[in-house]
Length: 205
Image (cartoon, rainbow, N blue to C red; front, side):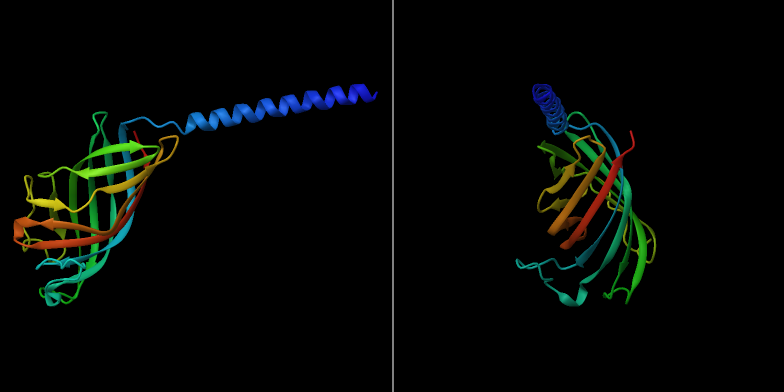
């Protein structure tokens, strides 16, 4: 009887070990990421931006505080990834702004897009802006007709790459616009924007 119990206990332990090894192997396989992505990810996000028509100092304070303004914004759009390590971000961005030199307070929406190159390292994604691809057009609010569309090839510079994470199954995406993330829009002379934004999305196709 005791021998049978011992044999049963050993058998159960072997089964349990086999299951554990199978789960561990499956988990490890799930953590294997490719070098490139392919497909579209719908996303939403929120953040805040400070606009400085005169640019920023090295400590990220506006050169001319009297013309600067800030406010929150909301994003809804699509990230598209290609197998060649390039992609595009397209969004409708709605914002609240003020006070500034033009309008005490205002709200509006704009179409915004740019292209990027990307690299994947263990689930971490690094986005690098492709110059000459920045597009911005105000569709609602007081900036319509006041600020003309910024069309490629625009003279726009991003001061640092963006970062993101892709889930092991490739279905979920998070992109972080860390701070201070600065955009220099040279089309209007010295016009700079610093933003902190996070986008979260899921694969649609």
